[in-house]
Every structure is written in C-alpha cells, then in structure tokens.
Image (cartoon, rainbow, N blue to C red; front, side, top):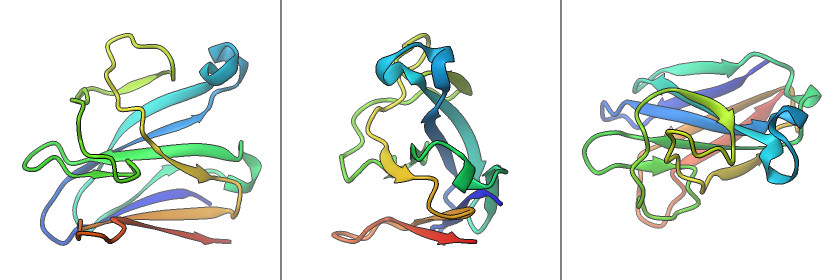
Length: 139
C-alpha cells in the first residue's frame, strides 16, 4: 500500500516532489490544518514510495507539486500555471501557512487520496497541450 511517484521523462531529468496533506489540529484551524512536506528525489526511470499507508485510511484531500531544478524549470502538478516563484532547495515539514524559510509554490494539483489503497503518479515529459502527469489508482 503506497503513494508512488514515477519519473517517466525519458531524458535524464531528476525531479523533486512535495506534498500537502492534512496535518490535523497540530497546525491550528482553517487551512492551516494542512502540512507541506518535501522534497523527495525521483531520478529518471525510477519509482519511489513516499507514503507507505493504505490510502483509503487517510484524509481524503491532499496535493502534490514536482519540479526540475535545472534547465527550463519544468513543473508538474501546478495545474498548468507557468513557473513563477523560486522554490527553496532544502527539506521542509511544516504547517501550510507557515512561511518560515519557505517560498514553496502554493499551486498544487489537488488529489483525493482515499479512492484506493495505492496511488501512482507518473511524471511525464511536457508536451504542448497535453497533461504532463498521469494518475493510476489500484488496490
């Protein structure tokens, strides 16, 4: 049981992934009940498991954002919004609304994490007018 990320860019791009997940009352109230967590490195051609849990047992709402740090700054999960904010290069795990040392982009692709036991997000090469990631769910 897992939340998997696969890098299928087929061009040697290394991608870093971050998540927004429900963090419960530890983060306060309102939207601050969510946490932002990152980065996980996914090398081209690899798949990593960043959350080893039956996804049907977790909060139903979350989101992801992925970025290539070099070259043309490709992004995934940004709902098609152009890259416009530098994203910090260090790890983080904090309340979503906490700006301490973090300029993490806030335009994450929303996902329902409780639809299946396992979810795989495949990051693909950007092609004009085509989605640059695919979602697969399975039990």
